Image (cartoon, rainbow, N blue to C red):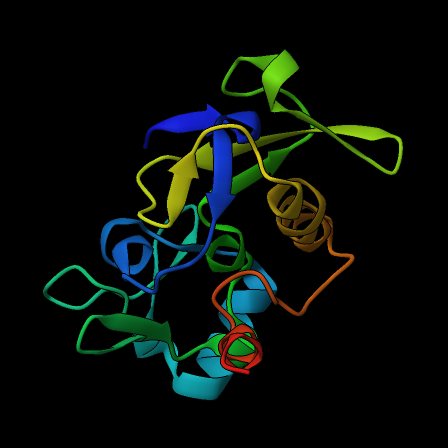
Length: 165
């Protein structure tokens, strides 16, 4: 991971490359694990002593990654785990990765620290655009806080439909 403050990102758009689904372990919260096991069976998860993970295929990709040509889509859109919804963003209540002053994001009077994994191919570095600052970041903050469930600026199929008009 190469983590930077959100203020170093000009814009972000998911390009559906599947990198996040191929190179990162997805840690599930207990309710997420239960939902997936109930819907697909335990063979799609990989519990260990301290956490539950999504199962990976032999090639290392997530078992729910579906790809066609150069586009990858998650088959868990209706029950996507929080870790998947948030990637490449990390929304924290304290500055875990340093650079506190440039990572802080004021959301409704509360300071949160927002970082981005630079390994994501959908990032454009630079000064944040108004769209990124006032639309993209708030959506991810609201998802992280549990205020919002639906995704529009990220990898949801709804976002795909909205962008096609």
